[in-house]
Length: 311
Image (cartoon, rainbow, N blue to C red; front, side, top):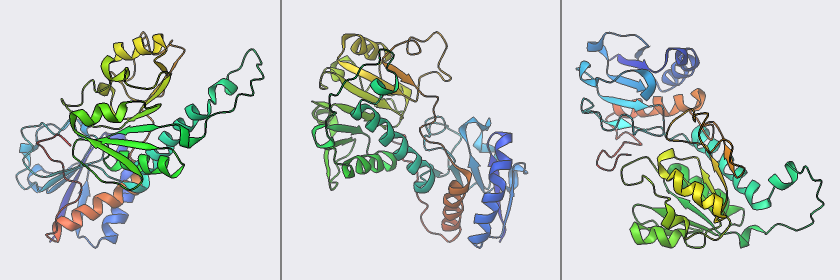
């Protein structure tokens, strides 16, 4: 039977996604109709971006599943009209690899003290050698697909890596913590902290004044996760006191970051414009096509969101 698939994202995305989606759907052996405009009563699957403007999933009586193009689903998971399975984007070749490269790059940047040599107006000839990886404890908050891949990459480079997750995990090469008490233990003495938690009520302000105080003095914060994970005022206080030496931030509560936000002029903050990782059509299309094929073959879909925890 013919499968009807609606592409619901910003209009300009259709030209980027159409060819890769058709190629991968063909390769999966599916008989399908794919379009960005379709009669609601025909739609069985929705390839979805939360910024598409689509908010009422009750309009689609034959809907089987919604496949999100984004890793983050906080903007849709609470939608009361969504009563079918919701799959988030987990793309090892695109999203995950991009995140690993960004996190590893900025971790090495801070670890090696590269900023002092890149911006050196006084022409200082400082021969102080950097620490080596084994002497620089790193903590990764969040051990989902993205966090786990980053933690493993850093451990492979020789960093002693601790990881924290909501539920207990046992991972080779990573010291794992879980639960409320485990979070404080994971942060204690960390010199670099990478935040890759989802945006949920339980994770808001995970890094606050009390937890920032647990870090090694002069620690570095790297946040490519969600802007809500950090209490901004507490981080600014920690930066001004020297408890945190530098924060590299890719995500913010309001985006684009307002021009009058104190992060912009702060000498110890690096602002990047939400580019740590993003969905790449060529690789994301393979994930989407494979999941639709699984559903049509009555196999369990992958990367389904647990509504009770929000991701």
